[in-house]
Image 1 (cartoon, helix red, strand yellow):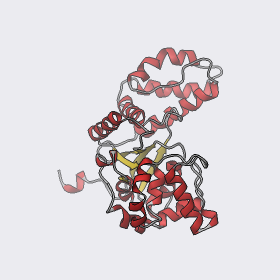
Image 2 (tube, helix red, strand yellow):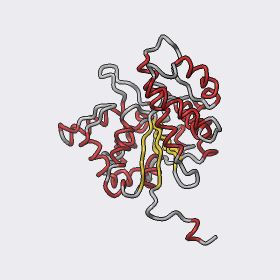
Image 3 (cartoon, helix red, strand yellow):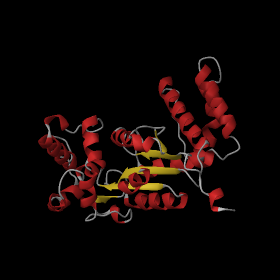
Length: 289
């Protein structure tokens, strides 16, 4: 087979499917990258929702992604998608929630996909979960395993997951060829590295790693430092967790050169990020440019 036959054509967009730990911040940042003119012409970048939005444990996220990849190859996936469509279109008069549960609860559990089956839960929540499952499955249906990429973005602070879970996440991502972007301690530190000099980060390194919550402001150390630096730059650039302003995200993206100077002195290996401050998220972002 010739080289021309095995290399995808340049006009074929590569798909990057992102799953993120944070409910909003990472979603906003990745979408801002995706919407840059020089990026969206090259790739299809899609940030997919977690089925259970409150379930942010990184190991659970990774296991559910493995489940989605496996489920789409299962013989029942086409029938499942048809029934999802039927339920969403006619949930008040077609296949019932109970019917859906009886037919698919065990199958989905086999692939680490958990829906809220409890009948006492509001129907709208169940519909939201079904819609997310439907969207995720359809994105994986057109996923080319040897060409497209699955990207996982997580924090490695102690609140995110336990030490053994961290090792499991590394193993699962390596086995499934997922791109894993880790920041220790949190995504706010990734942003912070775009703003302040490395000398300041080194001085604050112990407090950054501990990232304790301030008793008065209730903000953690890194978030408090980030907000302070942004406010010093411009009063309009204050940081709001889970809802960063567009001008803040733009500033972060535009200040990549500062980040590049800083990161060479910090941890970039996922194994080392278990206990050291730094990030590997940029190694994924570089692939988008």
